[in-house]
Length: 323
Image 1 (cartoon, rainbow, N blue to C red):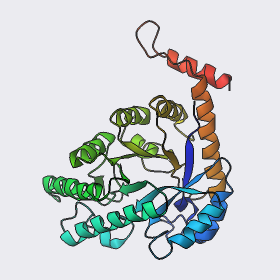
Image 2: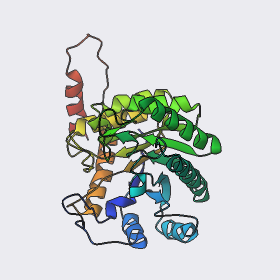
Image 3: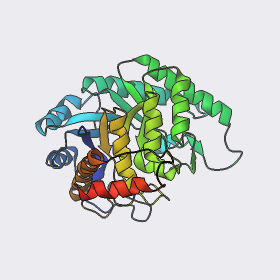
Image 4: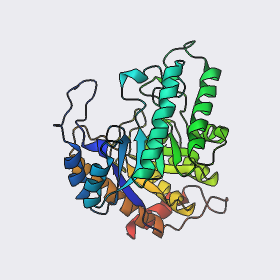
């Protein structure tokens, strides 16, 4: 089994604000200090950052130099389409043409920036493209806007992939792109081969999916362009270190990424509110490697009625014993 390329989302080293502690649990840490800390993580080679907050046309050369000194490549560039009040009516699906136009402009800018910094993936999390109440939204029109806007971006340049990151809810109570199947449908509807899906392990759990199954489906359609790993209790997007809750599912996820030939980045997307970010990230890296070792030793036999159901768990336990 190959070793996955692992990167870390820079936001793990933020102040970790929440609705109850609006000032956050951590002191502010500037970009350079975050990079230095991330560069000290063992068995890590990449970082995931945001546009235009972390890198933009005015600072990217200076900041790329800092990242290169720490031995970090950029795994994906996220477009800011959610975390500012101006996006409250949505981005690509907004009824306000000015916001739709801005979303397209921002995404094209991120695509250009990605190429400038040696990255081939732009991530689109559409957390405010959705609704809160019934009879609030024109669903058909919103879907049309989503398809048209992302299609325009996909056609802008075919040397950058767009990953649509689906999520059940939050910030909107209901997000339009809320499952692997819907994200795949949107990607296909654009008609652009460079538009695919970002599978976030925790988001998949929240959508009541088995992440391994969703990954296999997306890879079968050649649409899985990026992966986020974390964990949660299935109720909300807790962004806990990988393996803290759903460890058997995570091992199966790693197995299927390898089986289907996934060779792109696996990016840690955690939000360690009250944890030490350095420890939480290193634990996740170590658990990925542990899961790879287990998956490599697994004697996988898919159920065909030749033996009782549940034998797959027995074989998983044997593989763990042999690591």
